[in-house]
Length: 536
Image 1 (tube, rainbow, N blue to C red):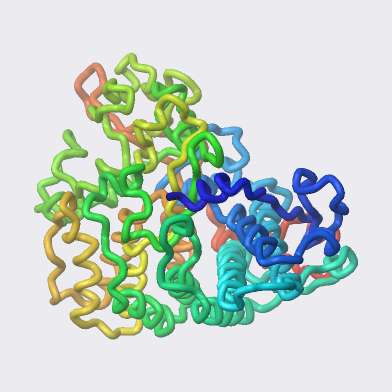
Image 2: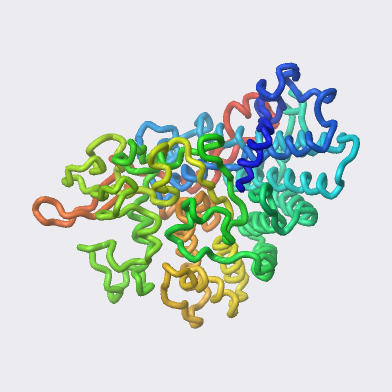
């Protein structure tokens, strides 16, 4: 049974904590009309263990859902399809500190942090009969959910305020930034403390909650982002050695209803059809599918990153790659992740995106159709076709494939290349029933393995919200982001192979400043203690 299904069956109210500027706590008016607007009334709440459960349940609302898709569209692997969308300016590099995307990301993260801080500051007030082990677990869940937000803030903005307790209005206007090292130290400590009080697994109604393994997995991610490779490898290895997780047998089905709550998932955001829903089908599907919006679409750069079915990069003269049939005999994850010409669609039609195809999905047929001629296939489940804006499909936030790749990358960067590194990579490339790429040779050197694992992260984890952090920490964004965005290769009416150019403008990436977003200007206006990031 889904976690959110349980919440709604029990008729628990999912409430959220508001935020003014940095960290002011308010309560959703739907919780209780009698509750003051600046805080939950301590006279009517925080009295029982049930209150603590209700409060910690609410914290899960602030996990990312469909938000994971926009960040990939700010990289080389995807494109913001509508030129006047808020994200388009960030993608092009023409944004500044007043961008609403930046502010919404900042404020959304601090909203989650504020809710967790309020919970942690008040859960100790619970009276009467209570299970101390259960309360400790709730505290662990809150710590992980707060750390999740700080991981995001750290890689996007760098040095940010490290707020651990609820703040007054005046305190919010005076808080100062912590160093990046201090932030990562805090994340590490919080996740270690949380892991000690979290269970290995849940059953029935509680499936979907934070586990010890989710805490360790986020620690591995955070340490990798921080360049703390030994710590990242250790956390990842603990999960691997725990033998509780494995790759789901079918990559093609991994992001569909049939695979929910499988043994590859360490953390996801849970949804419930028609009740607590997401609209990813509507957001990403081709236009012909119930007016899918194609909001974010794959690029040729990503498609070219998938090797041939023999495991060769397509630029290798001996790879067998055929430019006239560019999507044939390729890594099967390409066809599992992206709608390609000739693919069946959820409504039974065939996807034909070429500009001269005359279909609803043809490039240029409508401003909503994909401008690259590719559409994202992950999370597009036929079950959602009838009601694409009210999907109950869970969105995966952390899975075992990432743990394996984190372990491999960290060990490679440490220069500790052994059989366990090859095993982690080869599990990704060869252990699923529908992905069988050649076993990686143990003769590869450090640089060859570095490039291999980076390519594997790019294609294996495409459209999962991780690539922006990756190209920032690899310092490759300045090479892969600038320039035109290209799409499909198709045969024009003269029989010539033509590559679609998705947009008239070129992307810009200024290495002097674009590796960090600017602190939102409205925050700096409210708090003179905040220092803007370099060159903004």
